[in-house]
Length: 322
Length: 248
Image 1 (tube, rainbow over the protein chains, first blue to last red):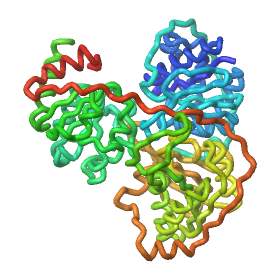
Image 2 (spheres, rainbow over the protein chains, first blue to last red):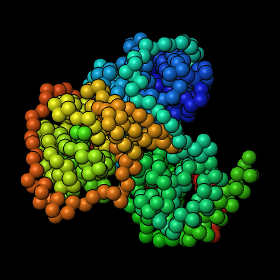
Image 3 (cartoon, rainbow over the protein chains, first blue to last red):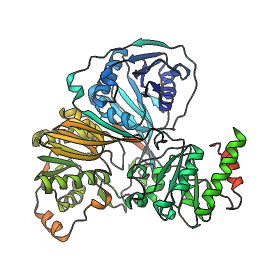
Image 4 (cartoon, chains in turn orange, green):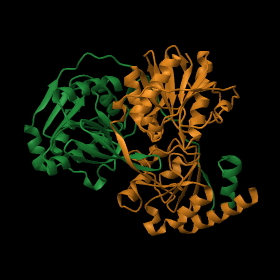
């Protein structure tokens, strides 16, 4: 009856979101009076999962699952849920988790709530708060099925320590040939770049940057902060930056701790896409830009002067705080 | 190749979102409805398959008569036939079951749906349709080619992309990138005239349960006032980010 949590790892190491979903699962387990079981794929050990409240780790070690495969992973998680008699399954909202969740929901005839931002309001029935209308609103959803899947939005719950004794168990789900009908032939991923999905801080540029040749200063600011770079829709439409950096309603949502918008006026679609970020800073030469109404801190002025100066100040700050 | 594109009828991206009846219903007053942008990217790719590879393209929507103008727009863009499943789109699994029935009856090779609708953002219909009909599935699809019975799809992953191979029938969750923004077609007068004569078939729903219910809505708290920092005093901004916001 434990709460099952899918803890994602990369090259054997758990991702930060794994600890966040584990923390959340612990909160749900306490509401239900039960414990948390994690299911991991090709991770070396339980790692820090015990620190965030996981009592048991089901370790799947399988050569065929080295690369993420939505159907096979969903099949394995389903079998883990059945073995544990889990009625609530928690996963992140990474691209991979969002890929497998609906497949898992069909297999378990489970209700699925995505983009959940808080602990359930109640467990009988299970009701959760989630974002809707691409962050323009929240929606309270009641799940009426026996088994329920909750997709937790990144950075919505945070890490909560709850030191727990953890047992580890090897788990070998029986995978069908049909689980491997969609196959990865190549992966193209920049190894050294912070991704928007994982970033705590995002530095984003708009049309005010005047051209792709001016992105160097944003990249330097991002590097100083350990941040990812992003851009507004017009910038990606004009081909100044790749589509993968477009944030907003039809691009990626950003739920960072700090979002710095440079030369972005703040169209309603863009503001919706970044509204889940905790602190927003706007730098723009137009004091009437709508972004000033949506941000926490603002600097009115020429980005080409402010950004390099800010980078310098931040470097000094980092040097004196390290 | 037979393609089915799933069309959600959603508020335009510029819409202000309001609720009525004690925050339990989405207030549609003054709201313009459009084809869900993620679906439109998928539909535009389907048009490419029609032009280059002679595919037929049907579109389907689950909803009441109010969604018909949105389906007509899809026909004006170039879809051959529209199907409306005559029932409110109650929840993700209910919609997926309706589409799965249409998909099975029509024996489609390729089913394209947006990765999520921009209203409820459930992000589950394409994957559930695939699961229900036993087809292969690729989500967050930003590139798609089909040769014979074999598809090559590019999927956006966190921090990059990967290329996948799968045989048909295939369901893809589409998004921007499967075609570019500049590829989107604004229907011309000829398209609009033709769309009036194209079939829009209304079918009755299959019996299906729901798994979830949206019980109420809430608008985000209004933002507090912004703190403006002088461009010559960026030390203050660093200080605020460190000591007040505690984000650096």
